[in-house]
Every structure is written in structure tokens, then in C-alpha cells.
Image 1 (cartoon, rainbow, N blue to C red):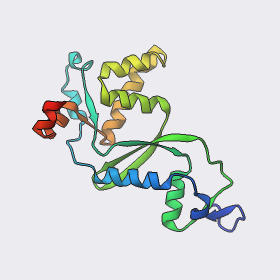
Image 2 (cartoon, rainbow, N blue to C red; image 1 turned 180 degrees about the vertical axis):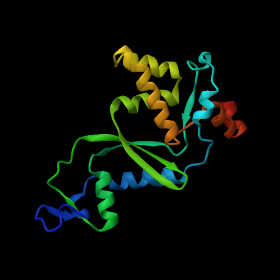
Image 3 (cartoon, helix red, strand yellow; image 1 turned 45 degrees about the vertical axis):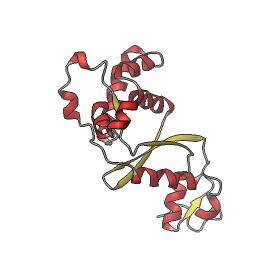
Image 4 (tube, helix red, strand yellow; image 1 turned 30 degrees about the vertical axis):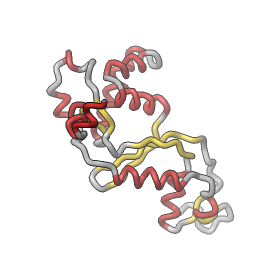
Length: 180
């Protein structure tokens, strides 16, 4: 049930969501849906790694993974617009935040990320596991780094959002591998 039914503080999604970057969000959702398939990294593959392999572990984002900066109400506006419901305009719009968009099978998923998680995921998919640990050790108490890093990687794996760099390279055409 919509909490603003009958309230004077309610507007149609079309009116309440103007200027909320809905088109950019829709485009990002479409791009994630249309992205190429790849082999998802499973936790079983990580279990086979020796301790010496972890520092150099390299993963890449699954091809459908996107990040976009949106106002906090954009996903709610999209849901309301699709359902033909009213939007409660008394709730604050909120600051822009980073949203991660990806595809699991044929379903589009999205969730907000805090700045630390967003930057850590970027490093994880562009550098190595040890680089993420170094970045986090400058921002978190030392005792929290292993837990945060393990949770970050476990969440990315559970969401089907990463693949091993070697697997991603094997899926690229030979001419693209040679120029990389």
C-alpha cells in the first residue's frame, strides 16, 4: 500500500520525479541487461587458491556491472512510475549516491553503495587484491581490513558481479588480448 494515498503531499511520479535522472538510470539498466555474458567467479574457485595466490588475485567486473551517481529517490521514482503510483514528496530527496547496477541471469539488480565500498570495488576490478587491502588500510582500523575485504569480495561473488581476470581475458577476441 502506498503511504501517500489521499495526501496533499503526494504527486504523480511524473511530476515528483522531474530532474531525477530517470532517463540515465533507465539507460544504465538497459546497458546492464544487454551486456555480454561471462563466467561468474564462484566461491569454489577462491577456495582453491593458496595463501600465496591471494595478494595477486585479480578479478574484473562482470560485463553487466555499472555504477551511476543518482539522487536517493531515483529508484523509488522509477518503481512508482512503473506502477502508476503517487510519490511522497515530503520525504527528502537526499544527496546523490552511487548505485551499482548488474544483471543476474535475466534479472536486473541494483543497490546503493557507500563511497568506501564503491572505491574498493573499483580498485578490486582494476588492480589486485593486495591493492584493495592497501587502500583500505589507509581508511580503516587495521583490525577491520580483513573483514571488510572478505565481505566485499563475498558480496561481489554472491551478486554474480565478478569474474577472474584470466577468464575474462580468455573470453575476449585474440586481437583485443594482444592490444591489452
